[in-house]
Length: 171
Image 1 (spheres, rainbow, N blue to C red):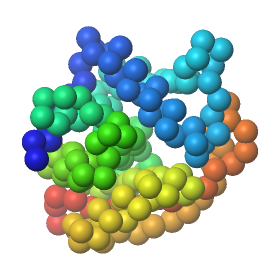
Image 2: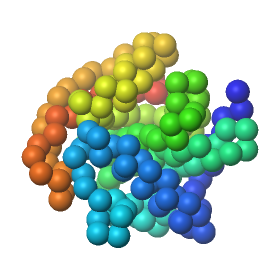
Image 3: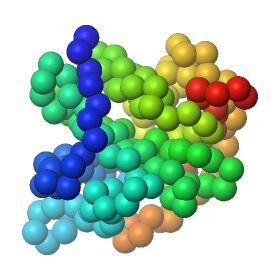
Image 4: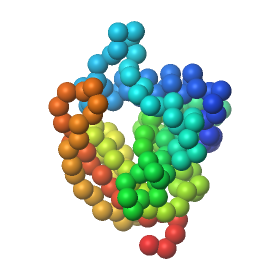
């Protein structure tokens, strides 16, 4: 399968924000986020991915078509002791369940090495299942923790599952 990741450029801002809105739509089932008055979700500071060198946004492409994105962060946008986070991973529904997201993650790990952190909303069963399967299939030893967070402008607290592991260098 021909999956590629390419850095999102500043001139692709509209494409990126459109995809991010689709991502927030999917995530709203688990986060409880409501639409803004203009019928979109709040992208908060998402535009920073196109401005900061420590943030690494990638489009995921399959057979020449954009099918999603993966967002990687590095210090100072990661927890202490962590080199990178896979902050967000999104595929358009049509392309899910075909192993394409795992291929995109493989490409990310080929570009970055170090200590990674990945988090999921605990009630997002598909995301939790994806990452557990990915760790198992790639024999990635990881530590897992749970904690509760409050998300800006969304009522209540949300339980987070967090995994930390090392990729690409001696452990």
